[in-house]
Image: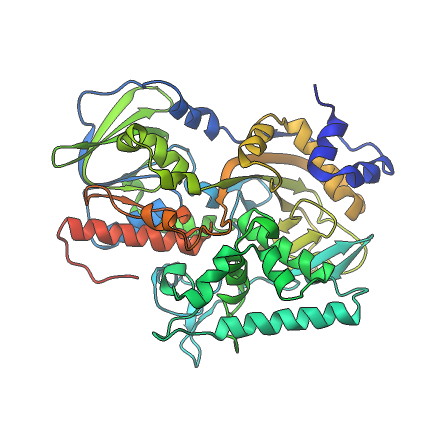
Length: 542
């Protein structure tokens, strides 16, 4: 059996273990693993599950999956007045990797925790934000402006390095003239790419991807890794390389070596015009769970059924049958729908669709997803450290983790030193994703408590005395990885093609980037295809 010491070294490296040895033994903080969905979801890997012989409901449209994409599809359909609509969700909590939780201290995210402010007032995301009541108007360029309470409060970001916290996510302390020159050159290159337009006036890098340019001048960057692009451009500064690699791990769950250069440059370019950047980041204590709740309100609770495992979707006369299992009672269920939106990751779609089980499409092999861990730490006091003060995003330079965000940052004043919740993120970016998932699911709560404390205690004074509870969520398939060649490869396009003209796909996987804007756009796109199939006229929200 692997020792706890070996677990720490495996996930954080030997340096973290050495740091722990210089400190008192960490406390036995109470807590738990809170993920259970894989235990039920893995039933899809087994043999034939029981089937009902009668329909529990006959519908115009069935949406399978209540993550951001599925709820966006249902939100769009409900917005068009479609009454014969049902959403089926495996979990008891809506939102998938954008879901949120709550304890006596605060609400908090279990995954996605912010939304970059849109540059345009067009499209479904600004519509959702208007429904949420956080758009205050338009600026002189026509871009939306936002309520102060949803724009991330100062200070936004800080970085821990050699015993001290510094402002921002680029390590300027001790940077050489060459380091800074390369940073400025990188910023100039990305500003030029951000301003680039093709002959049709489309941005080279746009949000969502499908609204941008598909010209080869830029899409050929997808054939390179971001590490290769940096080397090609002579950008060899270790500090710049670290910042870019951190961005790839943070947004895509992969290193710069395994991230498409196009995808990594999209991260830096898509949310600016070259001259102007967006209005910042929008966040809430519960993260993007706030957006999920607004989508769910638009759908209506009566149209959502939780705790249902859909295990088979197959063609039927005039539509589709969805065979499912009630998770609590294990009773079989069957639904009929004229149109279906399958809003699941590709690896799930490959197991659920009867036609794909019979003849698996080769393009599914191009989709890879990375495992993650998210932990929420309840603290009696906000954590302290030397140097720049506590920020919303707190990153450790020499760590394999992404550090943590203060879930309660948006709800607290800078002078408030009371109880708080910190949300800690760790992507498993090394090695084969399948092996990483197996390793992930073999870990216990005690393992993760040891890893988290080894990671955070060296950067904070007295945190061990402030910790009240740690809850840990393990995501086996957290984010699609935009590996080189994937974003502009044929597989992603083929995966979007409807089946029989009446089964439509929606998920952030289809955008190639695990972002709310991509999930929302593909959900709305699928919903509008459903409306067309039902011959219901409606002006587009895209």
